Length: 79
Image (cartoon, rainbow, N blue to C red; front, side):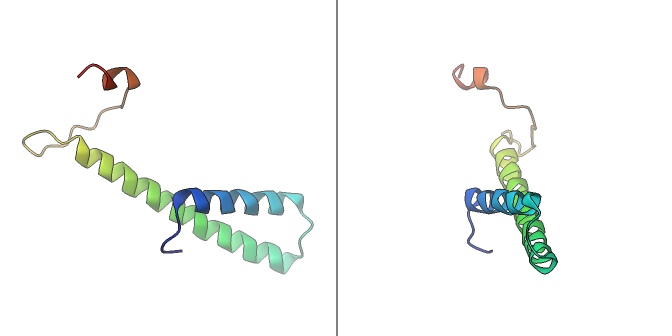
């Protein structure tokens, strides 16, 4: 799952959830899909954590100190 895009991983995860919710798969297939879903979930969480770190880096002040603050759309156009 190294080069998997977030959107692709999320779409596959949604497919897995839908198929598991139907409940018509044999147990072994359900377990395999569940395992794949867990891996995809962890991959998505890691991608989101990495993106959050990048955003935090972008809001560092001139002294290199991080200023973590909520992003607001209204602030975007006021610079």
